[in-house]
Length: 139
Image 1 (cartoon, rainbow, N blue to C red):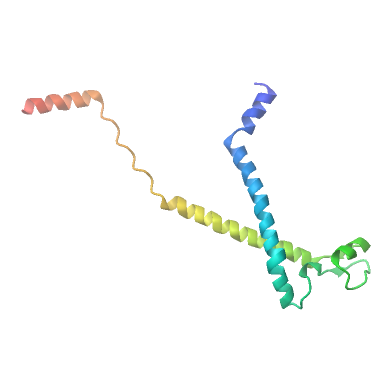
Image 2: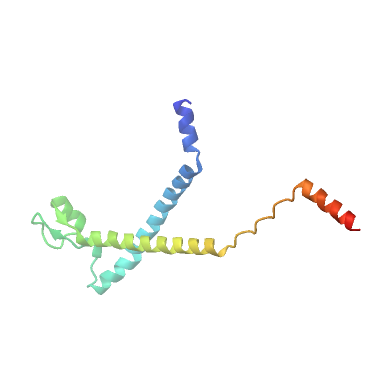
């Protein structure tokens, strides 16, 4: 079997295609969760803790001037960006929770669908003929 034919067989297997679809959908879903956290949740948290942009919380490590936006502070040297880390950690927690709920629902649906009853095995022809002979003898 040639290298190209082996690769073709590998690439068209169902698992590889399913994985590719999962990665694409996961990337898109990650963007949705990222937007939810950055555009809806973190502004509310920022409002509660004083109205500041939570993602701009950092500790300057290179004697940067206080109060600079995070991007400007990074240009001037190293920073300990704990606000940005907390935003990403919240993204992960929400994404993990939503995936947990989805898997839980999928498992519930799988368990609810009853298995189709197995069809009875066909009776062998010789048994059918013997039953007919028996029934005719009884008559």
